[in-house]
Amino acid sequence: MISVYCENIKQSFECEPGTTLSEFLTQTGLTLEWPVLAAVVDNQLKELGFNIYISHTVKFIDYSHPDGYRTYIRSLNFVLQKVVAGIYPQYSLVIDYNLQNGMYGELRELEPDEDNSPKVVALSEEEILEIKRRMQQLIDADLPFTRQKVRTDEAVAIFKLQNKPEKAFLHEQRGKFFTTVYYLDGYADHFYGPLLESTGKLTTFDFESFSRGFLIITPPITKPYEIVKTPYQYKLFDVFKEYSDWCSILGVKGVASLNQAILEDKARSLIQIAEGLHERKYAAIADEIFKRREKVKLVLIAGPSSSGKTTTSKRVALQTRVLGLNPIIIELDNYFIDRDFTPKDSDGNYDFEILEALDIEFLNGQLNELIQGKTINLPRFDFALGKRTFLGETLTMGEKDILIMEGIHALNPNLTKHLPRDTMFKIYASALTSLSLDENNNISSSDNRLIRRIVRDGFFRGVSPESTILRWPSVRRGEINNIFPHQENADIMFNSALIYELPLLKYYAEPSLRRIAPNSPASTESIRLLKFLSYIQELQPSEISLVPPTSVMREFIGGSSFRY
Image 1 (cartoon, rainbow, N blue to C red):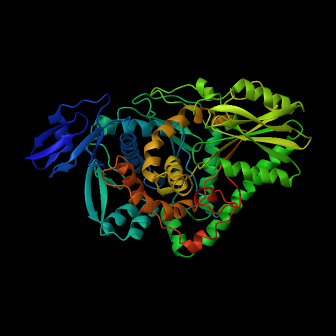
Image 2: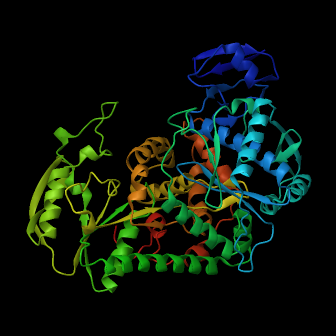
Image 3: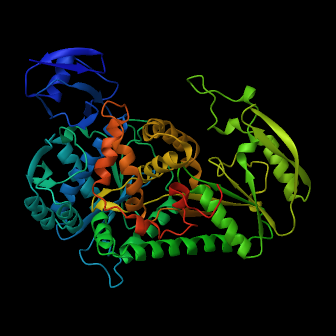
């Protein structure tokens, strides 16, 4: 008999060798608030069909856990893939990126247009409903997901037959002898993490037409098993789509073709083109501000953590200066209320992330005075004392002056509720990557930003990757509550993602992640990120040196010509 410790209930149990996690769960009698979907075994994520042969520490997880949520999403995608392959075997299914409303996907013809852009196959409402109906049939049948290791050449042959050349190419590149393949009712595919036990656990989803494709809608992690209808994010979708089209035009359909470009010594070209596209975007934003210069006096920039907001504000300021304007940076952190009045969170800690931590009335008063041509005394917040101070600095706006203010609440209308709307120009900045691992496994923008933050925190803040990972869930909660609900208020969105950045960041992030101890509470996430990065070909120092000093990536790796 084997002794296995269940972390959920702080108790050890004896079980026979070969017992599955699902059987062990029954033995413990454990019930969570939501159905158990997977388990963390010695800090490694496992499906419930995993067999126990030695002593372990096991923690069962549900939909409210990030890995439980991802397991649910992967499994639902597999059901969708099987259905689409059965109805439309002549097309390729592409899961492109995540919106707040759901995952966006398209059906595409196998051969692209002459300019290398994809040919999207439009589906009627009746066809969308038929896909949804067949998905529900598979879910109602409660069919098992099974896992098997096969020779990589066999797996590659399977993927090619299924019109997944990027997936086949990626696994050929890895050079591994074996590849894990999952099966659902005879249909095979590969995923970059475990699946559920069976389709019957996929109790809540929706599927509807959107743009040229469709949305796969699942409950948010904050509200398990509840479909939450949110306004469609058309501006965000357009930014994602633009990035996806750039990738296609460059011939980069996924990680495999990006890796191949790097192996073929095309990193210089990728860097130059990506930075050139950014330069055009910064210039276009400045042009829009200049067109409205008679009324616009304040530029507001918001975005989630590690989105490159600071560099964006500096690059926009530089471009407006080229047009003859005089940008003045206003630091929102100087408008915190005194520490004695700062609200506290549920744990009793000061909550500096919420809007109420700022002195809104004082801020609006000063901004209105500046717009009216008056002189103000600039505040400076003393973080050591927790109080606002004045050091004799004054500010008066001239005819060509324009204020630039960056912060997580910058797009929240309540931040500037006493200012006329036409005096403001709002920018949303984020790293909205739509680069995918393969045709139906996209890369999360959140993961992209987390890797950015791990690198930056290590270089400039003396924060370990372990600490960054453990803090990330609270950062994400703050984004969900304070930033994402207001992103569509932007006049324009800037995508700070660069096609070459994951190969760049891997060079710095991978060694840091490997130093996280196996028994660390951050180990599960570090293992997941390392597995993800293992599919990416990293840049070498000679190639990294080609990144220009004004690039947003220099905010994270150093060497910027801007002062931060």
